[in-house]
Amino acid sequence: MHRVGSRADFDWRKDGTSVRSGYNLKNMKRIRILMAIYVALGIALAGESVAGGSLVPTSVVPALPDTITGKPGPGMFLVAKRALDDSHFGQSVVYLVEHDEDGTLGLIVNRSSDVSLSEAIPDIEDKQATAHALHYGGPVGLPMILMLVRSESATEGMAHVVDDVYISSDRRVLDEVLAAKNPGSEVRFYIGYSGWAAGQLDFELVRDDWHVVAADTDAIFSGETDSLWNRLIERLEPTGIQVDIRPSLPILVSAYPITDAY
Image (cartoon, rainbow, N blue to C red; front, side, top):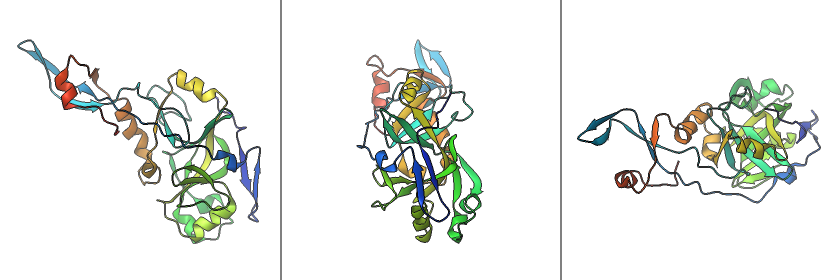
């Protein structure tokens, strides 16, 4: 699976001036796309017995069929399917920050590292930098660091994603965030990003590589991101034998009604 690196080239000089070529962060501001994800619950049968001609399940687990999907756009998750065998994107959760006719930009949000921000950028003198770890955002632009910031309003150098989430690669924003002592629940730092050329992600969706679901912003800024794929995939592709919820099985419909929560 090939990912192109021409979507963006962000960098900053040590003197604090921002350098961006080939792409403007302001162009990342797009109309918010919110897709309602309706979750049809199935039944996972770990065991079964037949008594008096009736099927009796020995364990019942609510499940989501993998056919439920949204449309890619800012503020959506790409969740790698179990079958996706890829060294970069296998078992990954990608937070999309832009998707349009020119291509797609996102950040892998479930791969943390033991490298601190101060180790990656030696000229940072703020001791607060040691409190922030770097996360692996993707295989493109690895010398680059991007930030996801939760804020009530944008400052210069930030681009809006959705709701209270902004993205930036501006050194001035970095210094402001550190000076404000923003906790990890308000800012995340990523090295590298994930990029798709025009039409490339659409091809991968047709190939059935990804689930597309509304992102959980709180999960992105939590301390348990490494387990995010496991939690999502267990609901999107539960293990066990699945049965359809249909009118001929009214007891299942009443016991496990369709819900929009996942």
